[in-house]
Length: 356
Figure 1 (cartoon, rainbow, N blue to C red):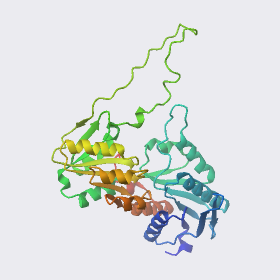
Figure 2: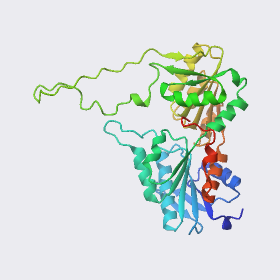
Figure 3: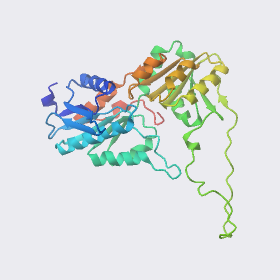
Figure 4: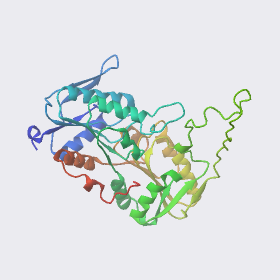
């Protein structure tokens, strides 16, 4: 396809090898060239973006992966979007496979809903649409004042299980906490496999975090108004860890949307091994794999961790050969093509359940 006649451009919002590689995979599938731009950090650590070609009247797609330096990546995206806006681009669409700060989408004590703040910043910078994948909470789409297409990675992970996991018919899908049970059930139903759910004191879900509803503390004030006495809250105590479902002699496949700090996954793998699972796989869309995650995975009972290329993790793969990557550039490229041509996105969500 001739770039000059395509009516749209695809830019990479940073110059990291992972983002460039994903951008090139997408543009190769689309048959267009990657837009010419320069993104770099000055000596004082300020981000500078220069667009090297005319974008007037064009629809622009900005591809931005989120490396370990999250805040720099956000600034690169914001500055590039604003530069394109002031260069009279017609539409500016962000392709952000992993949306940062998505875990901070609920009020925690005296904190803030950072995900909502980021959504407002992107809109102010000039974005008119976002393509992302497997948002941590689907309700995040309501933070935006423009359309959000939340694609799913589950078809690619399901295909990996069917093609790369030996004897997958003897597998069982595992939710490492009750909050992940719906996603696990969706995988189990489509693979025609059994389901197991883990619950107990080794798990620490986001719903258990302090959200400020106990502030100020429930102490009886003898000097204040004594007419109103609220009942004291009973402390929550989790039972000993249990596995609901038979994993003995099975391949255990734990599914989740994000794998970051892996302590919970390592603990879950040990329990499953004790209960008789002879092989353990982890399937997740976004492989953040922070801190010592590669070392912990390598030393654990986990046999394989399968993630997509929504987040750069080349360094982690060198440190741990158990980490495998599934390419999702195909669905991102198809989403770009359909949005530009004004086609329905329903095809990309066929056989996708609400719980994915």
